Length: 384
Image 1 (cartoon, one colour):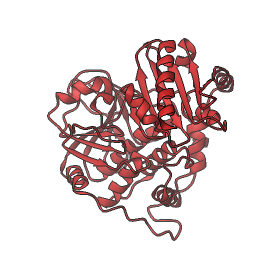
Image 2: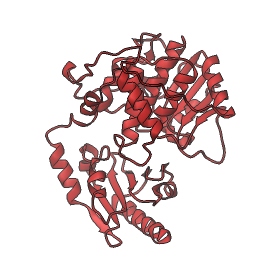
Image 3: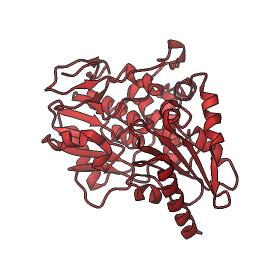
């Protein structure tokens, strides 16, 4: 059975429940759901409110044309993301679900982990299911967004391997050496996966509704640090301008994503910062949250603490380590120079981008910290 709201509806963006084929899915719990006062208030228009010239997407490559054909030809789609889906992942899913329902397709969004509550505004139009084992809904195309390593969909990997569906990836990360997919829409120069979905909307001639537009905007702002990271480019800013002209409200989305923390958040942030250790003449900063503090704290969610540490003039690389409930350690690595933290993350079976990467590493917090500090120091020395 599919429990909760998990299938995206047709065109209108409404959500319809549906009998499945033995799957056990759980709708994400929206803790601290926003009130109407926190939702976007600007009217949304199918036409531009300002005389902007719409950007034209780049001409698709042969590989991307195959992906577009698969989106046109498929009838039943399951969209999925990586473990602990972030804003780029779930925002891109919302936008692609909008496109596919506009094309009269059947669509399910099913992730290995629940959507974080700060993104609950997207749940107004899209049902995000959480996989709990069993068979997936019958579908002919599986779309994997914001990752290209099969292992990154966690416990869902075996379920997808058993389904005779075509596999399509839409991603802006570096591809692996052994492609396992049937089609791919990949551009590693794109600032976010959501930007790729925005291109797809234009190439397929689909106008995004409010939910889809908010999905693209969410993807862009979470992966560019609200347009302050070095991956912010002209295409990103042009797309943002188009979406705002349509009625997407940046202020309301910023408040929804970043300004709904509990009263303990400032204290937790201070506790996290007080644990900071510096290495290599203060070029490397490491912040840790152990045990229950790491599991419950919101201090290391997002880049708030990382940004504070990157403001230290001598710091080139910041590592945040949070001990998870299962005993593993979650790494978030950020760089403000040309140092490539993706090289570091890949040593620990993680990945990402040159200036922002991550991994989940088995071991105690002290063991993982020692390994990461040694590996980072070696890479920093080699880059000097």
